[in-house]
Each structure stands twice: as structure tokens, then as C-alpha cells.
Length: 212
Ligand SMILES: [Zn+2]
Image (cartoon, rainbow, N blue to C red; front, top):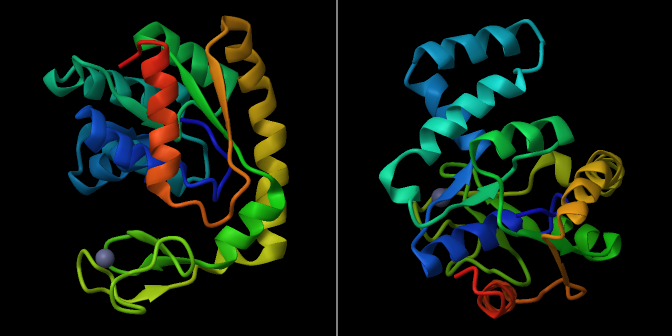
């Protein structure tokens, strides 16, 4: 699942995962779990980040390979946050390349509006939106009762910079998958489009091509 920051890809990926009963794998979460459990790889990753070095793609690749080899991935899985570069895509190709890349194509002004109304639970990280995905009680997380807040990096100037970085980083990667003919664009121009509607559209694309 590809999409710029604020495209809602994490939300859609987790709903699709429920819908298709296949795991939603976030490499960020895999890394945090290794560190939490203080595994050998977790300590290795910590030593990279403490010294300000990037975690090598092969290390992330190994984590991913372990995760994908588990029984619950036999029917498939949804990747979110990986790959981010062509080198990572090549690592993934050696493990299990994607059948389809869903590319969420969202105009910058829509992202700006969505991120500036985004709320995150300070306790469990669940994401809400003041317009499109309201919590049941204002300012309170439905899942854990934690306080909702706005993130510092959801300021317009920071968002614009992140979008620029994303576009530059992602273009070569999209070209890589375009050449394989597996990119499916999903244009979403509505800032307050309900997540269910977007997920239904993604499912329609996947079913039409018999991926699911
Ligand atoms: Zn919460």
C-alpha cells in the first residue's frame, strides 16, 4: 500500500486486513516490537539508531522474511511502510514481491486539510479525524480512553516539506513497479471521504483482478 503521509494508508490497510483476514504488516511496528522484546536484531537496530546510522535494508528484510514465513501470511499480507526505496523493493522481491501495488493518489491540498484535522491517541496511537473519522466522545479514544491530540509534525509547513520529500523518494519506486505493470492508482480527492468508501473501492479493484 503506497501513499503520501496523510493519505490514510495505515487506516485503509488495517481495515482491509480485517476485511480479507490477512495480516497488515507495518515494518515500523516490526522494528518497535524487536526493540521492545530486546531480541538480538532489536539490539542491533538500537545500536544503529543510537549512532545515527540508518538500519540496513537487509536487517529489515530479515525481519520481514521471518514475519512473512509465519502461517497467518500463507493467504497473503498487506505491507505498509515498506519498501520506500528501489533497493528495498529488490530486497522484498527476493522474499516475496507484491502482486499488486495500490497507490493512493491524493492531491496535496486534500492532504493538508486532512492532516490539519487529524487527531492521534496519545496512549495507543489510534488515528481519528475531526471531520471524517470522529471519536465517539470528543477528544477521547474509542479504543483505550486515551486523550486525543494533534501531532507537532501536522503543521502546514512541515506537511508541505514531508510531501516534497515523499514525492522525490517515491517516484523511482513507483517507476520500478510501473515497469512490472502492477501499480493501481486510486485517486481520492475528497478530504473527508469515509474510510469505508475508500476500502470498498480498493476491494473492488482487487476483486476485479482476482487478487482476492
Ligand atoms: Zn487509544
